[in-house]
Length: 526
Image (tube, rainbow, N blue to C red; front, side):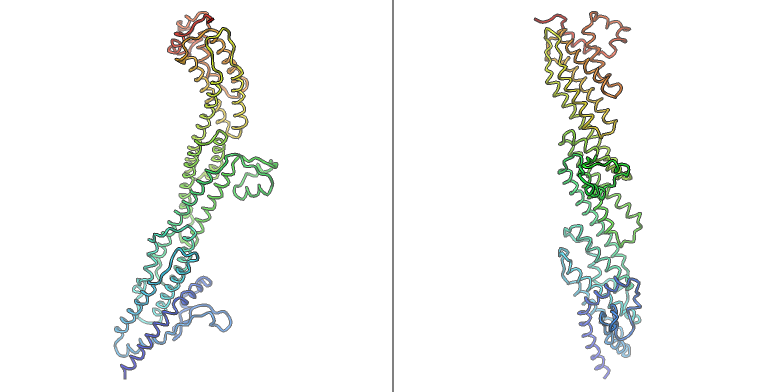
């Protein structure tokens, strides 16, 4: 009789395993839903020590329409009968084997992280939650029948932990969706008393992957902007367009009152796109960070490091772009970086900005000097002349070019840079003019040729002294001026007198004098 009773309850128990397996996805979905809407509800409110256990929410009508019923009677009966027969351990081992088998069925469920709505993965998580909710009910409604540690180590949980190693290439948004589902899983299982440290470790790993992909995407988009930007001041045509600008970059209040439309902004359209992309990265970063237990300052440090990497990448891209751009574009890059430096003053990446600004400044000097070289080619000096006809018209054009460049193209740059453009340009011009005099291809130079050359130099000296508000620029021409004065002097031997040399020819280099004198004649060449 006792054996027949035992066999009957064991058969009912077998049917119970099947029903629980079928109900697990619904149990998991309801348990997760309950966690989302009643986060403060404890497991004691949900797990009732009776023959039936309800999981879900009461909708206020019949009290059970949203509840999943778990009939625990077969388990309790089977456990009682085996206790009476002294065969509890046998039933305990049998129960454990059956639950392991069910766990393996959950483990075999297939899903793809490539699905647009992650439906398969969501169903899998519901099965996992349902499995562990049932285990929680058993743990809390029986005495020394199940060990929580044995439950925690079952396969469905281990497979969740294994997600950290998946190799599938996913976009950042997909990682965000996965994270939300894993957080819901973590919170639900934690509510039922399970240790979720490994799930939190998984979330951190997902966060690392997500932030890495988000950073790469941001860098790629910035690279496209670098390549597509026209590098010219942004023109704002109306107040609505200006509002759009303010939504991306906050212009100081004192500068807004002077706006008249259409208005040329100091920065380019590319700068606004930089700001928008970087802002989107920060928003995406903190969106993933929601639900994490780290302190805010820890997250701030993480986003700061990522931003430094992004901005350094942007600086490198612009550094390469500078070599492909013209003068006005190189100037625009410097101006854009000044605004970026202000916006990111607390980041180490500002050092990279300054380095790129130096590269851009160097590029400006190179372009201006190339233009100077082009003007000098037009001068085409004839040293064997019968009169001292100068090339002043060429140098007038050159001086007007430099004035225009500084007053318009370079107008928005700091005064220090504009001054240095003049300084570098006239230093380069003085060096090139000296090279003309020392050119080994020139075999003979006459006094009229030197006098013509001196007239041009006088024009440049006058221009520098009267029109350029920068001190000491005329010093660039001192060596050349003293050399020409010596060549035009009636008493060239006076350079041999140390006292006279220190007063009149202190910057003259002896090697240059020797080179010029070897081909110099004071007589006119017919």
